[in-house]
Length: 297
Image 1 (spheres, rainbow, N blue to C red):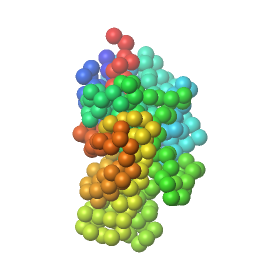
Image 2 (cartoon, rainbow, N blue to C red; image 1 turned 180 degrees about the vertical axis):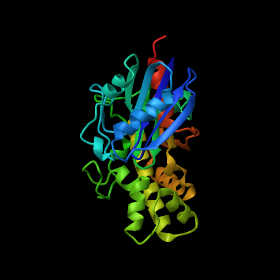
Image 3 (cartoon, helix red, strand yellow; image 1 turned 120 degrees about the horizontal axis):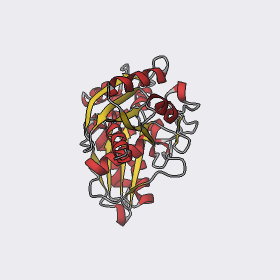
Image 4 (cartoon, one colour; image 1 turned 30 degrees about the vertical axis):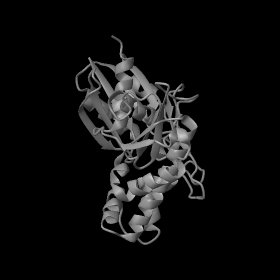
């Protein structure tokens, strides 16, 4: 009998087996943007499951999502942007399995609360900063999901004074300013010639002025969003994961400076902002927690 975790991201899918201690095994990843996404996702799940009978699958997906309907509408995955019934598709693949869906941010904060930087914290915020920006909330010890399952979507809070167009159709969202993809686009529009967030971070560490400016812009936007969310939610710790979050001081220096500037209310003045220690991929870990806790005994 097997329990599976599935992470549906903007650029890749990941899946793995999960044991009862929420540990992942046999993790595999495939690109998300080539051909039919469900065909790639289905094959990934089949390979990871192998010959095992699957009794539960936890799915963490980029949003928006409609959890009651079992539908995902990832903004950065064009083939599914108008909606894909992922829960129905996975149930058809594994008819005897319990299938649970959550937005990636809810999985993220679930993983951090069970195994990461939010252990023992009743009120906290988890972010992922990668190709997009997502988030999840722990309030009074419980994951906040909201009416449709999209609660915690800090990536679509608005950054004051910025009107950069966002894939959601709005302007000035944290994701439009601070994600790895957005930062690369901003830098390239100003003459930088690299291709990825990893390259942008390396250029910033090497002193490239455009790369440094892009990182400062992203860090400031993240700090503003975190400060606003902390004041709204009354949290005392924020944990950040995702590939772009590992960009080092060119991103974290401006981020910390923004938090120090904007998080001024007494009840959030001691706000702690930390890099996640979960190395496997926090959304996938959280999807595993979702599956294990839903699996029949």
